[in-house]
Amino acid sequence: MRKPTDLRQKVLDASLALIEEGGLDRLSMREVARKAGVSHQAPYHYFADREAILAAIAGEGFSKLGLSLMRAADQARAEPTKAVEAMGRAYVEFALRNPGYFQAMFRADAVPLDRYPDARKQEDEAFGKLVEGIDKALAGQPAEVRRTMAIACWAVVHGLATLILEGSLARKVGIPRAQQRQVANEVIGTFTRLFGKDRA
Image 1 (cartoon, rainbow, N blue to C red):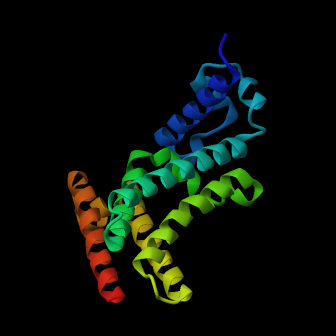
Image 2 (cartoon, rainbow, N blue to C red):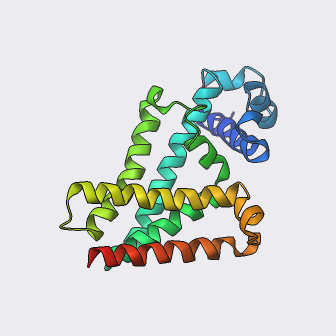
């Protein structure tokens, strides 16, 4: 007999697959049940509705992102600016490897995280990893400066990930898909070099 936790994960896995196939609009309780190969009522045993599934996916995504950022920072621990660069690359890589999670994590119209404290906690912790890295790289700078730079770093890497996922780098700039990760890394490297100059 399948464990309840296994069935819950099966519902989440099916939901992620549907999002990756057709975006958030593809997701419905009936479609999730069909994709998971379970009865139409089975998803309701774990989730009240579609929004609850998306909140669970978002929370799981933020948890995974936070771990990715932490691992990246740990690998460059000796140099704070390099750690920020590594975290930026890890952010984009996470988005490209996990487009289903990424969509659920940043669509407030579909997933109002204020209604889901666990997911919001995971979001805060993931962003906290980035803030921690900025604080180390800009040690001695006022809190306002560190916060502004954290937002700037987030905007750069989130923007790059979105441009790649939505196909804009290919359409508007003509960068082939095979080169987009490299270009993103070059942009992040350039930004963090400027970031390092600001610290000096």
